[in-house]
Image (cartoon, rainbow, N blue to C red; front, side, top):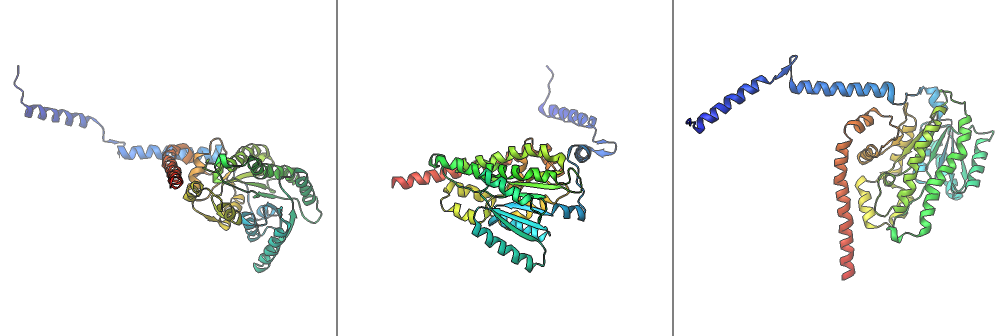
Length: 380
């Protein structure tokens, strides 16, 4: 048996490994391997961007000053007496919308909102004409009558923009939620939006047919709770989730009529309604909701109006980093209009899903800690 020392064996192994490494090419066409990999990735992304821009994404609409002026002819805003709705109306004034019609249930609040907007128009040297119409969006007959009155008026042109902002919220554990609350929230948040859109859309579709110089816009207002089910929102989340299916189906129907449909997902927003909801909000719901921060009504309204006026209006209108992540995680088969969002959904959705698991881990901990604290308080 040959006498092979450990030292010789290690030396032979090192020589063999050196020879094998020399056989592996370190460059290709003058490029180091890592450089080649980066080039390949870059080419793949570039080809993807070209396919998205030239084929898959909706075409950018023409939006000259004249066309933008046509779009800003007459905007109808539901829930316009306060909160996000009133802030949307102010943004429309800033953008020189000619006619703005506010719809809400409370007539006295509507009149105050009109006074505030009229003063805002005067102060900012604008020419917007404000009108109000008191109606409960959850009552079909009243909504259809309101749409007929507004759209057939000889003094005001047919609406070119519709912002469905009217909505309400409440939070409670499922077993503590009244049976009537499920119907109430669905009636206002989903059916109210569907009724208003159904009542106004026929008039909006008559406007100049499919003329590309006369675009029209419809905006729905969901919530981040319409993307992610949250403790305490069993009734509220369901009413907001319904809007996504409605919006996805409707945008297929009206796109050829040069009407865009958008779905906004505001996080917690500092409004009178939010203050009222917080009085009885479960601690778990409050702590989980706080992870997305608190936005002002003006911030939300500004993003909504700017999105509606883009050359390629996005279907999903989101707010903040968490809103961007949620929109891309829950995109599913929703239309995508942003190249960046499309690239993220194609190549990086797995990473976002991994990050989302840390959020869910944190939410579970919140629920368990609050539950443990309550049990401790009861036992004292």
